[in-house]
Image (cartoon, rainbow, N blue to C red; front, side):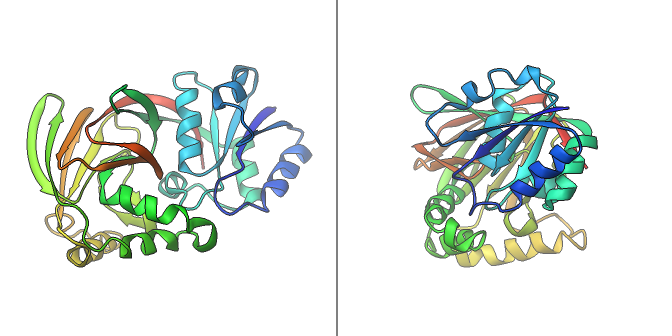
Length: 295
């Protein structure tokens, strides 16, 4: 088996288990080629010959995973996630293990599942990129920006610190166009979600399935961080019991092609990557575009 391993040198706080993972693959007879993001080369160049490999592994965080999946969208090449980022939300949602030995076994013997990919369009030049967890506008982007400089020191706790640094987020009026239908709403964030769970394993969209061909559009309707406490508590309870009426403080819609405008305009993020742009945004589903190795 030939394995192409793409490692993002900037993800997370480093991963000492990566050597064990590569060793286990080698001991099983796999031929491993390692290439590194962060040394000046583009991802497209790193995966230029991906079709010549049996597996392509993304070693990094959610941004690394989504970028690689978008670069190989529709190729049918099995992609393996090696969670080496700070939050690793897609791995969390897919219950992908963190242990290098189990990850090696999954790379060699895991089954494949076709997963939806999101395509995000933003900015005056209509820049496009892929996302696999969520794209968002508002409070979530502010948290990501504040947490970015703390992630190497604090790990996932950096997101909590980022939230506490922004106790009075901007409240905007949202105009959503979902599969041609217009919806008006108000809140501190709008998230287009491909999966159910976010940081700290909280479920914001319990019905979300990354293989169902649709997104959940979640509006966080609170007006400040203290008002978020019931929402977080309700999402926490979703792990153990079905709460009547869903999660408090959240408005959820479903669609395949979503436009989000906000007044005032809000900052943007996707899969933990903060963009130098503000709303509006467009997100559309690329159904089954990624062939993923799963437990």
